[in-house]
Length: 254
Image (cartoon, rainbow, N blue to C red):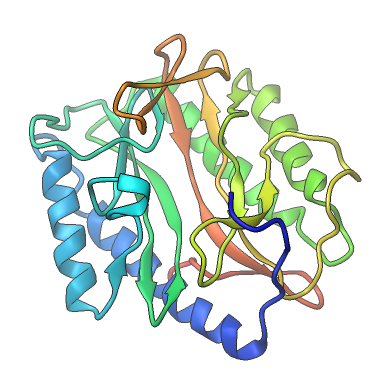
């Protein structure tokens, strides 16, 4: 996860993160408009790389610890880190999480969203809607002087209250010029526990919520994580900054 020391960003650094975050939001919006039955996840990846280069940025995932593509595309039972593939054609009723992280002027903008492919099943629709609300509730729990555990507690209470489970194996993370750094931000936990939130901290909240068990299995490619019971999983992610009086979402499309 990188250094355990939490970096507090300066006003200049926060402005750089805003710019990277806005670029990430625009890229994700652009790719979302392409999601439809019949498109391959590789086509989404290729367009992401083209668009990113066109906008003067680079793709953080490409080559990161050997990751082979520019974005992650996680379909249906894939929890996270799905690798785009020319043979993976989206079908009506699928759900797909697209996770993008462009680097602009040295700073990372990291965001993801789960999209419906055509018409979702009632279960898929509910799962995705609950997961998005989990993200909102996690963000709403961020305030200076609060604790990391406040975030996970808010997410866990809402997800489990709707009969879903919270993935434990993957967490949110600090981010700046470094892709993954301190603090780790679990999406489950206890209110009032964990590291104290301070203005200038920048990190992701990215809950992965499963239809069935919270357990996941990483496949032989070393990246693709599937739900252990092969039921659906959804995820939403924003990069945010703790401010003097609350929180700023850096990857919200303006």
